[in-house]
Image (cartoon, rainbow, N blue to C red; front, side, top):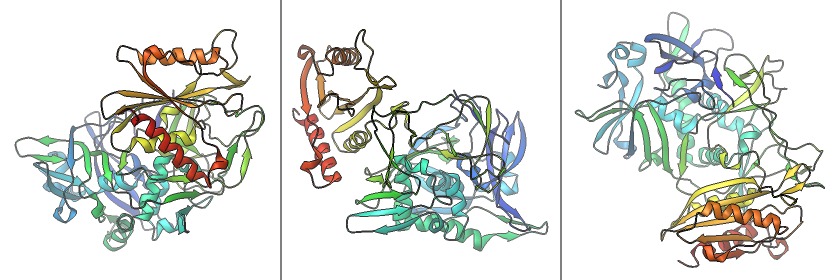
Length: 536
């Protein structure tokens, strides 16, 4: 198991407050961010490079445990945001829930807040925290916010008759690893295609350029400021922070989730990156390279990473961002790359063993450490070590789950069970055969299970099965029995109908029967969804 540590944050420290941005009066200066930490009851002031803005949620305690770099603190509250024209702009020092020792610190007290009434409470929302939640989900995005026309240097957008295309350059753009994660493709699309959201993002640079002040100590300083997008009206916000029930005053330390953000477009959106190649299966089945192990990672935000080294993704706790629809965002692969056994795979791995120092600053030729990037949107936990299996079906399942009357409860991809004297649980001697199981709750109160088997090696043709078990049946035990029997029967379905209310079959569609890939995907989605509601 891995730990993610931060070079300038000792284990156990808790972030108390965010201060000013500042930079020195020198050639090629970099903006940095001041902060206050509680270290064993004592205040400690620290300064960070821009990229660390991604993790600086007030109230977080940096525990540095396995798969848990920090814990959030504070009272949990769910709110519906009012129209932004009702929001006030006030300094944080006026908030009665701010601790006195922080209110006495001028740099903290002068930070800007949005103040509004929501669900009977007066909410104090620091502007930096709202921008962090809306925009700062990767180091390169934070850098873009502090540059004029920063998004234009990272992405270019064009539209043809059928779709929208977003291109990012190889070295200076979005890391290709992030484009493989749907949560990031959705977020980038929302940021680029919603005019108000993009205007809000770009207002960070405009405010910085117009409002920074010079001091006698040869520093330029700036209190974070930006214009919020009006599409936040009506969005559900989950927050943590101190709440006074008598005065009904809530100070937001950290936004845990934003739900119901309006996605602006319905067209298919394709992302282009020079290094993305379509993995295709060679002879012997699709070999998946195993993760060689895990080790600790120490993030150094100041040291320049070397652009020639392999980039690592640092998996952080998920930042809750949810849209009002399921955007159709996909990768536009360029060419194909063989992915058979014994050949190179287009897959990222994380070296294991010891502690590896990783940098999240902008890459530089001849840098000293490995480059890294934060990953905190939509971690792919349901796929285990098989992220390239059932890619289209998983997208279809997620789309179905966004529709009314049906809720996705579970989604897992795992190897078929081993059965003595049977070999069909393997695609070849190196490649396990996987199954996909999705569990849905239907609006009339029962659970339905979808089962799919990977037969991409053409050993057998198998339809998708959708099963509704009887109430007295333990579904997981029954599914395990079905899978074991399938291996025994040489990849043939055998389901005990006495344990089921309904068993439905959805045949796979033939590509030649449809004009294009998207017509095929839409038809497959319709047939799967109809099967869940056929007996409603």
